[in-house]
Length: 339
Figure 1 (tube, one colour):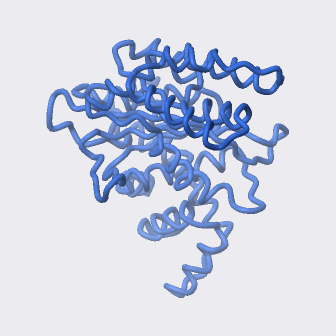
Figure 2: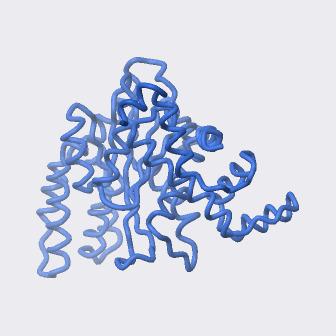
Figure 3: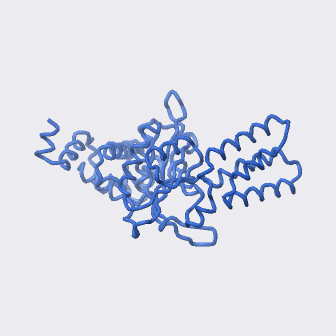
């Protein structure tokens, strides 16, 4: 029956039929539904209701804003899973064949109403190297990114991310992460030719903690740390590992931190060639994904006292990802399709 529908009506008609079958009678204009979704992803639903009243004199309850926002946000994942490319945010086509495209991933915890109260939210940020624009000394601005997020396991997150990456055929892929094994295993299995970079600041956190626990004199601590950072910047990871081994202490905490640092560096040695990466003009830090977590997840979904259902959180995060990706027109197209 599905094949027959596809043949007679085509894929676009089937999508519209699917949307109409699920669509609730909101009895609100398309423009207002778009405004409601925009407000719902931007601020708490009660604030959105007050804003509409003050700005437009319209009485729309917080509950209605929640219903409309979560319904449209909830349509996004099925569309991506069905590979409806017209609803998948895309970066501009790279201007040059060998342009680097960065993918950064990270996770944070979200408070939910589920039995297991805290759930991990995984977020990815994709952008071309040419979109990383310097605006001041030691300060850059990324003009355009695409964001992908999933509340739950990597089994749900990676298929979403792969559908976005599949659209980037002309660029060289660079993955920057904090050392989480789930990231690197997936990259190695699916993109074996990609460049993998361990975030520099996560790397130095290991030696900073060790130095803090081991050295009692501030001057010696600073001298040792400065040397290790210089060596890391010069591709001398093995020498840093040896310098860590040379530290001798009977304190249990120092031994544990020391061994953790050694193992961490050994596992990520090839991802710590920072001199080589910088000479290639590549970023070596994961600051962009950490700021994305603050902007997309924390500013809206981690406010005081908030608890989310999994589906509600995913819907609002989806809307925020589209808005932050500069692709709100896709949400408007979705609303038109359901009208």
